[in-house]
Amino acid sequence: MAKLELAGVTKRFGSTTAVAEIDLVIEDNEFFCIYGPPGCGKTTILRLLLGLETPDEGEIRIDGRTVNDVPAPDRNFAMVFQNLALFPHMTVRQNLSFPLKERKMARDVIERKVGEVAETLHITSLLDKLPAHLSGGERQRVAIGRSLVRDPNAYLMDEPISALDARLREEMRVELSRLQRELNHTLVYVTHDQEEALSVADRLCVMKAGRIAQIGTPQEIYNSPISRYVAEFVGSPPINLINGTFDAGKAEFRVEELGVALALAGELDQADGKAVIGVRPEDVIIERSEDGISAKIHEVEPLGAFTIIDIAAGEHKLRAQIPGQPQFELGEPVSVRFDLAKCHFFDDSTGKRFATGASLT
Image (cartoon, rainbow, N blue to C red):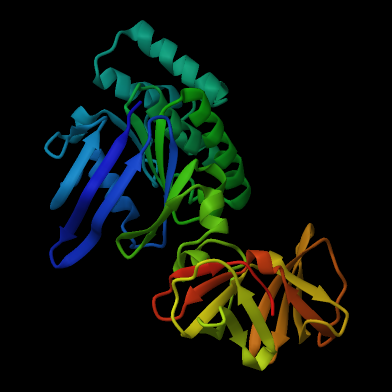
């Protein structure tokens, strides 16, 4: 169990800056997710924590102690890699017991720990099998189990379930959440999959090009994105973005071609100029009426519990996520409204969110 900190950490590889000025605090017993696209610095942060890389600037701390010069083995972290890295010639039992034998623990202690972990992960019946005879999900449990047999300061996981199919990933997300609660240890989890990030994390850090874009709970990140980048990157289907203009004197946002005029409330630190409204697909309301924005049905994608509908409103293409299985014909004229309380407004040049919520003028 440990509190982990990165204070002003920068790491370069030659002329390339992998991560820059990272300030990050991961609390003791927290399930913390580092989320971002490939190449954004997620794995570099994990390697810096683990001790496989040394920062060029800044400090890495474990429970307040600076560990920049402490080698990886002495940091006492358990790592689960993306490629699982199981020993193919060893049985499940031997794979699980390997890290304990390396630490020269007593045989009875090893047997007890292996048995406890196997029971926790529901792999007791697999102990005498080789990895080649296991399914993908079973191999994943073994890889996680090899970390659990230890009593580390924290568990670090680098996209550990990305190679599994969709159903197994869903099962393993539930399993990982359960394990973290039961183990009561710090768990740092790296992923590029937003479903994983939103579903398992106590808090998550959204990365962009080696820098932190936003840190918060999944609800905070989704409901109050700090920037257009975060709003676009978190959410499926992605947020609808419509260009318009903002009049600071009137606190009014307009999209002339759609006939949209909205009043924004509160203290707004935003100058006149171009702006963008962001509307989540679930906040787009489609009606068969003459009120609202005139549009036509462009595409319908039924997905069982909900339906994704593409709408053409003038030159703008919008996506709506509607509960159930509403029946619309392609080309059918409809009207569109937004749940204005949940709309976000972004500065066109900086991408910074300057307001959430609006009303009709």
